[in-house]
Length: 484
Image (tube, rainbow, N blue to C red; front, top):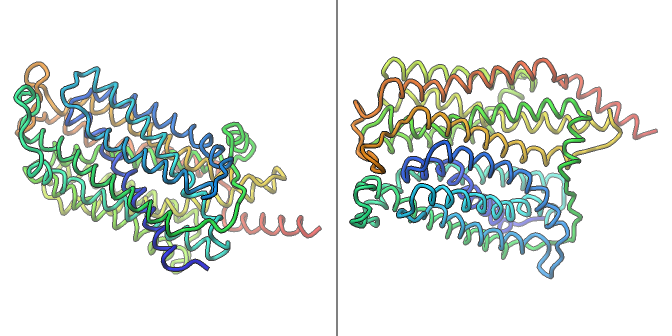
């Protein structure tokens, strides 16, 4: 049985891994577009292409890991290689040379972001795939997976809460002043954020490497396991032949596109709409409450809805989506009617993030049920293939959402140039951003997610048939078939 040391070290690895992922996913657009002034449209294209490429790269890396044989095992070497290279690329990505011109920054963003995705996959695939190599299966394996997922949520929450508190502090204490030739392009506040992200990312990268090294030293691969990998062709064949898996995958895309559009834009809402000199404190509070809510929703709210209130999984999904829609509507109403305090906005934040937490659980349950359905229908159990699709479509949804957010920022033009390449850093929030731009931002981050979620519910309600009764029938038929 696994000891406390092994469990804790594996969880620590998840904390570091998702700290890195959240930093890239949540702040790369803000860093290059808002601080460095890269075209929002260009960033949208880069993020979409990189995420789609990364999604296709996952199965390839899976094959590479599966064929690896060393004295240290097949997983730990790639964990170390991937972590070290990803940490270096992460730092370089958030340490862009500010003297580069517009084309140079676009090229720098494209190269570093694509490399970041490739190197992250190098360690992410072996991290999750190595569980069978040092667990005994059953409850031990399920418990470790749950622990890792929870620790990953902690890592994400740490970045969500801490980034926009620590970055300005580091900028003020370590950033200094911009060189004379760059002072006009990067006023003090903007230069402080630029340097703050550089030093903050360095700290995150060091912790990431430290946590992974501790994990690799603490965990021994107890057996040589066969790692099943799915080819792209197998993924799509499994979907085409399994209509219920296709329905769930489309639902995953829809739910995540809605959430990621808002998560990409909410920092701009706090900075340019609510505004104020301490906008980053309000943003950090919003993220702290939202991140905590998401974790609690996975651990407490879903079990309460399922076991105490006795709702079936399909009803829980509708309740969850309804919570999210109400949250978006409340956020839009509060902003439209001039609410300028952060505290009331915590209410819609809690609704949206609680919905996200429940959806993380419920969609995984739905996906698992489609495996049994596919086995009954096609006489083939595509478990590994179907679950490989989950990572693929989440990354695809992230790329689509980033593209939508980038195009919206390009159209809204929240940050106005004063002359030539000079940018406004100390914005007068009462006059520096037009009313139309503010309203446009509010509508994009609320109405588009609402529309996307409604479309998702229509697709789900029309196509999904795996209710609790149907799942029991399928299970019984499979048992009967196997007993013959």
